[in-house]
Length: 318
Ligand SMILES: Nc1ncnc2c1ncn2[C@@H]1O[C@H](COP(=O)(O)OP(=O)(O)OP(=O)(O)O)[C@@H](O)[C@H]1O
Image (tube, rainbow, N blue to C red):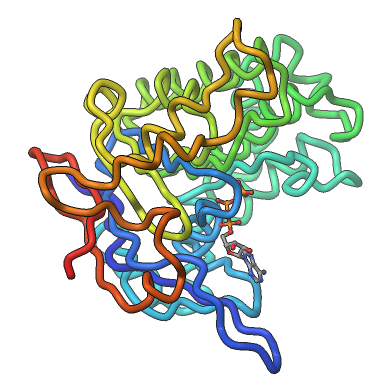
């Protein structure tokens, strides 16, 4: 059952005296109930702008110039400020990479979680503390009372992410948008945090939109994958299909740039031009690709074409 339906979403940024710049174009995907969908792409590909546009949280100079975001069949962009505020945090919550952006350093953890519960009237006042302690223990704190009375600055990176997850799940949201939730953490803690999110998802049938640049994280956590490049979706499929049969040359290049333990480091993180050379599939030319100039690209049309059931690839159509 579809929970989130993003259709033909486009966002541009405007700055005085300059031409508007398109950050994302024709973004089109769904998230079903209980599903984890990963948005993956290099830095600047438009992952964060997509999630901010969904939540109506774009910076002032950013504007949605096309498309719709249906959440439970309701277009979020038709709602008043107050209505969308009620959905944010309660039905859709966000976890960001940098916990200190979301946690107020001057307020104790327990009060910050209690404030959310109070804002959305989730439990009665006399049950607030008990509920906060319950949430802190769900996210793995063995000493919830100590954490309740801590300021965020006293917690390690992993503990801060746990506290953020406690905040994110406090209102039992239907959808969690996790934007690089573990990028700042070391690998062991990263796994613990993602396992925690997955466990919660399994138990509650919550949906997750996971934003990452890490194919390893995608392989272990996502049901479906959307590959973004230069503000557009270039390929999307279920995780098994994408890993076993990537089609777009950009997806292949991105996969080959995953660090391999035995290769020298200098070789690892760039997508080699040779991997982008095969520009055609079944007689159709991939769009976009780095062998085509901006000018030519602007003059041509492209769209996602379903090459196999549920497997979409972007090709030029003219
Ligand atoms: N406030 C802004 N003003 C102008 N352009 C912006 C603004 N925020 C983002 N952009 C542009 O939108 C495009 C997409 O950026 P976005 O942050 O979504 O990329 P990303 O894939 O999330 O990258 P990262 O992984 O580095 O966060 C980029 O070209 C970026 O320069």
